[in-house]
Amino acid sequence: MGERIFLPARRGETIVVFEHSEVPEKRRWEFVAVAVMENGQARREGWAHLSPKELNHCAKIGALLPRLEAEVGAMTPFDLHRTEAALDLPKELAMVEGSALLTLTLYLQLQRDTLVTAASVARYRARAAAERVEAGLSASIYTQLLKVGDAEGAGSLLDQDLAVVPERPPRTRDWGFFFGQAAGVRRRQARDAEAIALLHRSLTCWPTAHTWRRIGGIHEAQGQMSQAISAFESAEKLGPLPAQATIRLARWLLAEERIDDARRTALLARERGAGNAHVILDQLPSQAD
Image 1 (tube, rainbow, N blue to C red):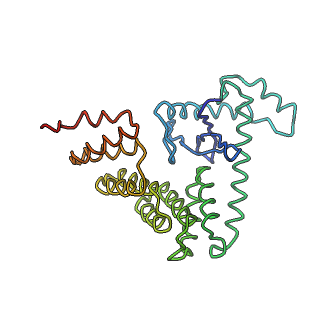
Image 2 (image 1 turned 180 degrees about the horizontal axis):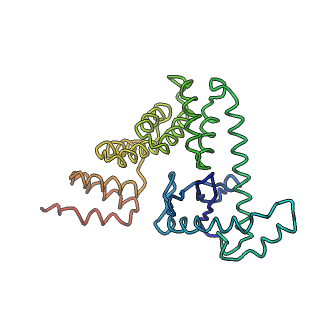
Image 3 (image 1 turned 45 degrees about the vertical axis):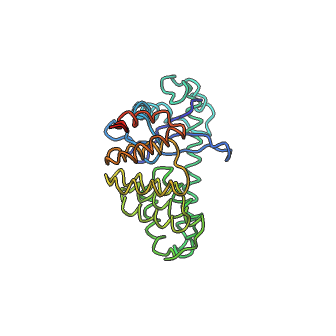
């Protein structure tokens, strides 16, 4: 199978496209929502990177879903004769590798993952917020809901849980993870100011360079470039930025006309293996100037 596999699925009237990726260390398959269909177009959802070509592919397979639904609608897993009809499905209905049978197999796995998530969330929701909130468990529930594209459900639970979270939770990795996942929920709800506040709470419990980079990315999306730069500089203090993150910082510094800082950062990116560092360096005035 290819490196990235996409499957369209229906959530009510909405078609959600999922990325199906293997997680070797966990020995299982995992689905992550990456795009939703809107007026025949696919738009990016969540944090997964999608190239324009991949987004266009998501739109094409999303448009194909109604026809596949019509073909397999009469099939039931407990009627073997009807299930065998999957072998005769037209190849053009296959979402994956030209195999309709493999496509249906992946749908069964997606269905299983969705049911497991629903059961976990139902058990969690059944308990009073004051009794259920536990850093690792709660964060895991939010993650599961986001992976099946239910940001509204995750936000509803988070509202209840935040009301009973200790004002000064223990400074542990689990609580850092909790606030980090909570920020992800708020981001998917387009509540960026709250996401940033939650990420700062995450830093209080467990400071990481990755969290600072997330803060910087949100500030960039809001056009707050000085805050974005400051966040990436804070990340650098905790550990060297990855090569492409270093290039990103250099680009921001150049846009802010901090020429010396942009040059220093671009050179640092080149040292860290960024092959495109020359794009920034070529835009800088020579030091002789």
